[in-house]
Image (cartoon, rainbow, N blue to C red):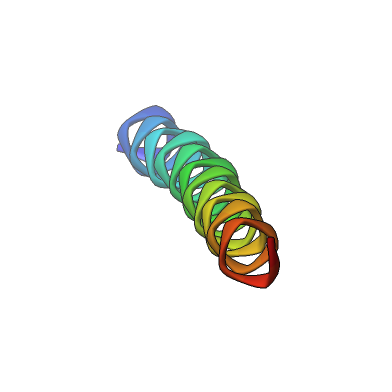
Amino acid sequence: MCIHIFQTLHYRFILTIRDIKYREATAADRLEFSFILTIRDIK
């Protein structure tokens, strides 16, 4: 029983970390993309 709870928590923890990394990556990509578009517009 205790082991099962621990495994579930561990699994959720891994998913959360993966989710945060994914969100940060997409946010960075979007910022970079808008930055490139802005530079193109200025030119």
